[in-house]
Image (tube, rainbow, N blue to C red; front, side, top):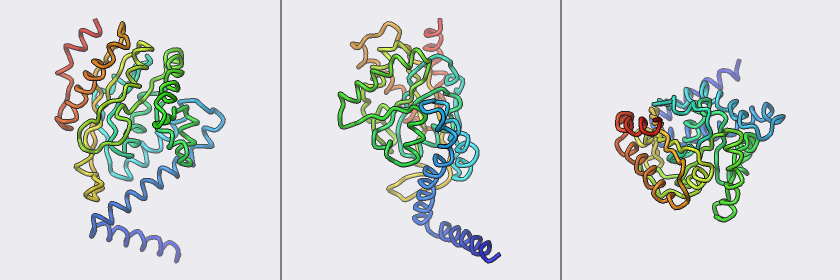
Amino acid sequence: MELLVFVLFSFLLLHLFCCISSTFKFYTKLVCYYLVLIIVPSVTIPLSIFRPGDPKNILYNSWVVHHIVVPLFGVNWKVRNEERLKTKEPCILVCNHQSSLDILGMMYIWPLLSPCIAVLKRELLFTGPFGIVSWLAGFIFLDRCNSEDARNTLNTKVKEVKEKRVKMWIFPEGTRNDNSTLLPFKKGAFHIAVQAQVPIIPVVFSSYSSFYKVCEKKFDTGTVVVNILPPVYTDGLTTQDIPELMKNVRSSMLNVLTLGANYNPTKEYVKHIDIAES
């Protein structure tokens, strides 16, 4: 009984401090979020350990995030044009990278993508349970300090993407960027798409700045709109076409990101879709 009273009193006190100080609230929620990134994989590792390398292993984590973690932190995800993610064909998904909160968005929409593997920086392999569960799901870890090794690693996955009809999720900026814009894209995702002759599907997470901003020590509740843009087909393209391909994909994503969460790009791309599907 005394323990229950202590726990309830602690929660009430914590809630009071969060209401009084936005900075205290920011650090409290951030610490809780990173604890979740440790606890959830720790729980799901035993479920995945007998199927190492299977992309479907990550669906256990997705279920927990979707039903428990997202409501807990009050960050809602609204997906537009989700039918574009349900394709059974292999493809390369490119997404803007704002912060570690991107993991929530990825896990929220992952059931629509499965089977899918993500390309992550090598350092994340050594982040305890998160790194282990990502490895068990067949995720790819790249050494950003060794571009040649990273390129060779990606090249070896081209055959797997096409033969096993697996989707691949890549952050083409290569690092986080929370300035409501896009950094220059790296070529890896586009090389794979052209080499495998599979389409690129751009994914844009709307800016988190209205509810989450590190420099302002702000972490409130909010809604993120996930815009799924039409596929960009690479049939017949060669390595010489990659710079123009990168430019066009980045431009379309930047347009959606800049115009904000209320912007729905569907009408703008109707003509493009009709041409691509004809």
